[in-house]
Length: 576
Image 1: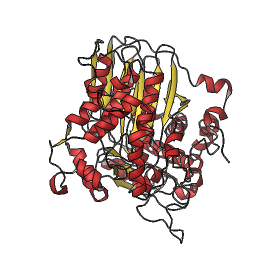
Image 2: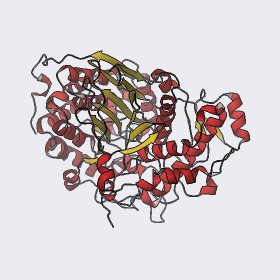
Image 3: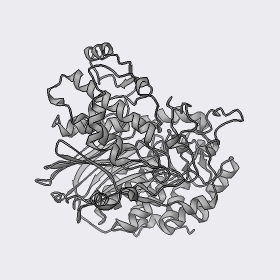
Image 4: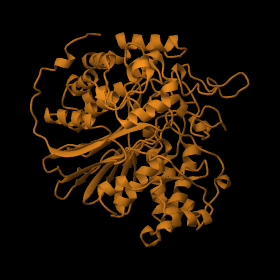
């Protein structure tokens, strides 16, 4: 049975109110962008300088990240764009999440004995869901932008033609996924003799530039029909996949009311299903609102936060999935009455997850995020993904498009671990046309005197990363750069362990948490790549920060609109 979208399930006044917030004051004539790569940040400012708004800039940043950060996002993937329009305070989330092909089924990754075929949901053609990012870029341009799509895509087309220089994170994740790259991907991303290219090596993507041109010229039909579609379907079919032209024709972006909540007088605005991010974030904050975190010792504070994480992630496991296919009582899960009940489970020691039963699903570890505020006060928080680093490892020959492996974000089989050692539930079971559950958490946090636009990649850890930074902001701890640099810790219910960065817990805190019953696991690598911008609504000033762990770039600059220097020369050639 199919249920109506969540946007309709809770109808009435409450639904309408969730779409509108009081407009923030305009900025002081400046704009701010924070993204995972300097070229993407620059692309956004280039479009702002040509008279575009934050939504046009979001197109440029999204498309350029698809070029220069191919391990994290791309035209072959999807994402969520949280929007705020300053003129009327309208807020909405664009759901550009990938969809399972119509022929997908619950048993598609199982052998005749009902056992999971290792790697089938992660690597190659069967792992790929129908991409949503191209449709979302078209939607942004048509409904919210000021410039034509062909103009906003120009920086990405140029970046694909001119190339980008190899950097350490690209190298690291390419090494990880190298065994699973198909021939077309190897030709683009690897060096001579299929070696990992050296730092500074320029990666050019001529086929991707041509694909972007077709999208720029023919809009939606430039991707989901015509030459690009034919090449995608040929590649998928030859590799044993199940996409059809009908799957491409049927893909649509959905506008969904964001999840909203309140904490210490601030308004939380975050991602809606099929992302679990907003519901889980609001649920955790609701639980924590019953504690005075400011008077607790550092380890007591972290213990309460860990238990709130555990409880909310349990609900993620049991209840959440694509609300167009299952019924989700979002109002109950995000209510303070429910949080009050959950809080009674929290004592001064660890509550074993086995005591709560069930277990969760998870999404990939590499994704991308950017945040934008323009000089009119429009804002975008967007998290994009192709799931695992370099997605399925498959490039459709002749397109330059690396395909996602978002099918692994479904529950492949009840009680069976996915690539991250986690177990799914029937709420997120595979079904044709369904969107897999996500953890992406693009978020606005609105206080009386400021607005924070924030998000990060990081798989199932996304929500807790946004949470920890949000708590710093909400409790007035440090500055924006501190919130992004802070050491991170995480509990996701199952496995029943606390993951943490080396600088997140002191030795004394580790010892004390261990005596409370927590199993601790230090990560040998830092995680996340948070991007944030902050608007002071009293004086219009802006701040921007990029995660110091990686290559990202954040900047605030005055933007004076001007006409482009050239007549869109990068988009002149090619027809569909």
